[in-house]
Length: 578
Image (cartoon, rainbow, N blue to C red; front, side):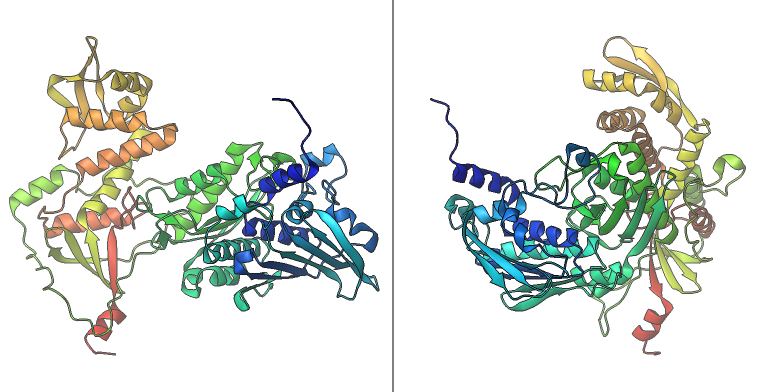
């Protein structure tokens, strides 16, 4: 086939496809231009999901009359002047592609009056070709009218979603821009109805109330962190009990630019590790400030991906800032009975306070003993503050051989004995590994464990980590490992099964710190009391005291809550005392 130069209209449509994927893309590009122009008020109007009409009006600096026509030319921009500017970009739009790309696939009218000018003007283009221009009476600022988007690109229209779906995407774009610029007033009008309005008073929590709801916004925890190299992280994160089934509520901004960053998402998930149940995700609105020389925003035409020159420093900043506020302020979930609700079944029977000798032996054999000496002190992190301490609890009894019933100054607490003991054991194991004093249970006879080639490779790669947790042994032939010792206190896993589980877990790990934490959680789970174990009052009291001394008493290492709180006021309401 012969090589030929593409027709300019075809080339323009191809370029437009990279920049303007759907109506929400056009809204994003046009609003970002308004923000770069210093707008403090931006009104977005759409019809038909943005396909019929998009109108963006702002009160920014405006465009001089003589530059209006030039603004529709490709690669015409006021944001950069030389290639040196690409290394330190501080604006949102900077390629000079938005207006010409949108004009190539729509009917576009650009009306503007520069700040301080007495006269405004307009230009009108259809499919990238200038049709008309002239004077216009208008306020200072700019209005961009886009009609019949993708009318000349039916293939693109065919793959768009329903009007309601496209309208939802526009709403999401506007709400995120409002999060990035809480000092700007945003108004979104869709099919004649106001669907989003931010006041522009700089209150980010108020913007989040508009994006989600007031109750969710009130529950969010404020994050504030910085480092010595002019980087900072500000925003809000949800406590563990406020979560979602996907990551759609994780909103990240770098220098006011809404971005998608797997690295930053991983840092946030690291901060929630052990506090949030698996399969659930937090609500996050985090605004990062990073020196412009340390980021590259030229990764993709949509400018939603950025690269960091010092990823480790940014990762650590985000992880520490979020973790600190979570550890310090994560509350105990509160049980809120519905008014006039009748229980569907009888409550669990409270077991008597007396305990049998056999139950005492079982529980104390797995570590329910008062801490003695520095080796059993709860883990203390120098980088994170201590959590809110639990109130002094008085053990009342045991429900269903699973839950410890305790009384505090603010009501009744139900404590999951397995989750609570798992938290205690997890922090003890972590402390022992940190001090290189792992509690090892030697086997009476060495056990030859057959391993797969993949497991043998993992064993060789992580042998020092396994030894630090108490796994002792040596290679035995080509496919076996002679196991001589395992972590002490195991209850429901045999030595061979635990070694295989540990190897399978480590095979998926990439970060040594995370691998160690996951292994500690696995050992803690297999050495904790189980649901169905009958405990004495003394054992339950010791467990509660040990839980109070942990760093994160409200969740087990896997994120499940350790306790629920039935407040005194709720009890009074249920019994008609108030």
